[in-house]
Image 1 (cartoon, protein in one colour):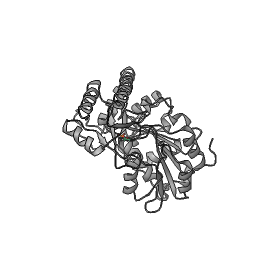
Image 2 (image 1 turned 90 degrees about the vertical axis):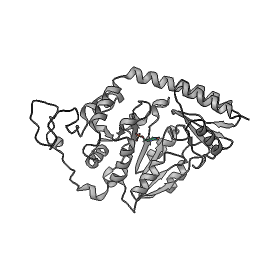
Image 3 (image 1 turned 180 degrees about the vertical axis):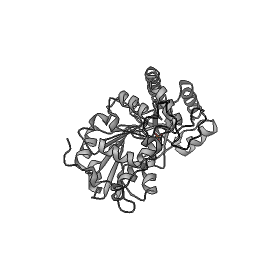
Image 4 (image 1 turned 45 degrees about the vertical axis):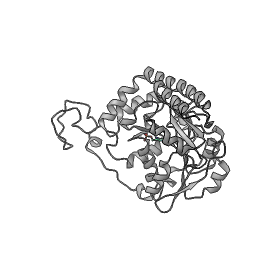
Length: 351
Ligand code: PMP
């Protein structure tokens, strides 16, 4: 249990007095009731399914998601993909040209890009040789202007999860926010950190419907945090950041729990087969463990193999330019047919 944490010390000064935009749908909340005549939001009155603004607080969808995750809606904020949620965290808690954040390469590239956009220094503390956070070095790099530490677990592109001990050490010792990006958590047998929010008022967990839930196209990201943190993010989010089509499709999809579970099972069994098959390819040097829906491999010459695969019509991700990832390719787990095609193509490329 972390004590003496005051989120108000981290909020950007200008936001403390900011009066958020109040939309028509914020001011009149009973918009679901069709017996009213709505002449408040300058919408086109002719019905076509999307002529009305969506619920700015996504109440139906949020209730469904909170229920699914065993959480309260007051601990949940939804965004236009988790990328939007990550950006909101910068805008809420990092003063441009003054504050800094910590990232751990090799990791998801958007943390660094968002730092650049928001004029925030990105202090990079590479993962160790086992792709685990270097806790002592991270804490050494923090100072009173360090606002956010980004932990991606399972990590993209390495695929592994970070040890619970490293994560709790950072949560205990650091007085800024620890963001755990759990985009790939549904492919892992490790527990999500959303269950630990009551212990750690400085914990923020992000998740997404883009991966296991199969909805990258609709853009829906989730952010779990204390009520106080969610309140601040709510104040600065664009009023209608989750559109009506997204709210409707996400709601429909998450009612299909059995289908999602069976797709995840399929992807996990394909991941196992893919890792085995990759190990038998002569120019594959290492197949890294994965808690995600992709597999990182070290090959003899990643640039060459990447080009050869493109020539055969298969697009993978060359991660070789990232720290600790020399000569690596990242393969997303596809359908059984796609994975078989990948393996057959790699076999053809063998000397
Ligand atoms: N976090 C990680 C670790 C990711 O790999 C990705 C997408 N590749 C995202 C976040 C972004 O997810 P979303 O589609 O929800 O914006």
